[in-house]
Amino acid sequence: MSIEDIFNLIDEDDAVLFLKSLIQINSVNPPGNEKRVAEVIRDRLEKAGLKAELHTFEMDRTNLFVEMIHNKQVKNSKSLVLSGHLDTVPTGNTKWESDPWSAFQKDGRLYGRGSSDMKSGVAAMVLALECIHRSGIKLKGNLAFLGTAGEEVDGRGARSVTKEGIIENATAMVIGEPTNNEVLIAHKGVLWLEVTISGKTAHAGWPENGINAISAMHQFVNQLEKMTLPDHEILGKSTINLGIVNGGVAPNMVADHCKLTLDIRLVPGQERDGILHQTKALLNELSNHMKITYEIKVLNDMLPVSTSKDNPFIKISANTLQMIFNKKPAFGGANYYSDGSIFTIKNRDIPILIFGPGNPDMAHQPNEWVDVENFIASIHYYVALAVKYLEEAE
Image 1 (cartoon, rainbow, N blue to C red):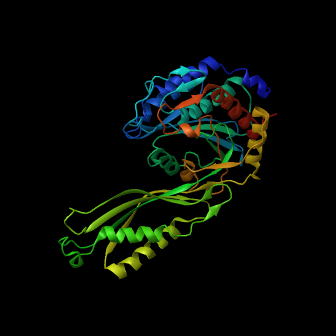
Image 2 (image 1 turned 120 degrees about the vertical axis):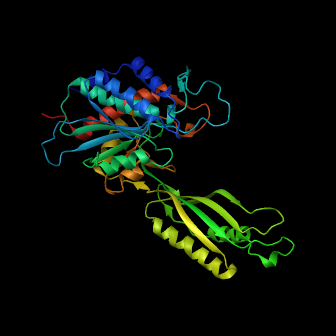
Image 3 (image 1 turned 180 degrees about the horizontal axis):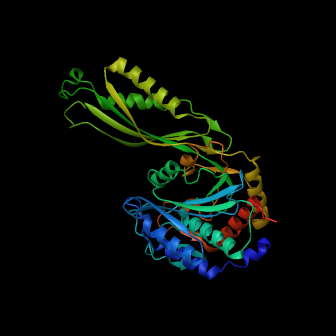
């Protein structure tokens, strides 16, 4: 059977209705409630003859896994995992032009929270798997879809998957984050640090009797922003964002505490331990100078992801892009992180492609939308990529 024959099994109207059904489920994280999304996907796949497993690790927090196994007995057979998260960010305080859960369709766009990030990618992957199954084509390797909970906050769904070893045999992965159907081969990691400086309170009329923690934090930030950060050929520079700061007791008192939360975007080659060492060195110097004490907490820690454009799987991905969209890949990267940061903890060498129909500029925005043509085209792409990578059995 040709790839074009599988394309003919795609019912575009039905595909849009399926995507709408996912958008209409409120899976804002927190609290998540991804179980409802997983159940809708499971029910659809079961009607197509595929058995999906639900893995609930907390109340209403559920991962979904389904696999088409063709060569279970063959050692070293290829295994491709298509993966996407089932949760979304909140709708925000800005009033939307339409109900965020209505999946409103207008002028070729489908509106709703999660339409771009990333229920369109999830729906397209599920439909690609379904179409390949319905076609009856036999592949040399195994094809799977993994839907995860909790990506938007702490990746707890992906951590649960990794702990259980559900995808330990994967030889390649696609993460369906919004890329406008462009081939991305890298994304930044992140390190969230909470730095607390403690000083000594005193009357504001005699500030020399105290140790001002806010002043100390000011000096720490000045030195932090002078830090030399590495540059990456695809992702550009590592960055530091001063996200949250609070401290002090009252205007007429010397501040005896100050807390700062940092978002540090990591590029490949930049190690968490190196950042922590530099941060501690700055604080130690400050402690010797001002007699403050400090504490550092790691709130979030995600690895950067990078795959060479010369990797065989990425080459197939590029050839597939040429076939479906008649364009050459830019081999770009993203400043956001994904579940790929967690999936690579145990397997740093697994090739990961980031590819999805969503518009990255719409992620986390009010009036979020996805282009319907992009969504349908991505189903074609996932089908062709799976068949080309896993190959049809003789």
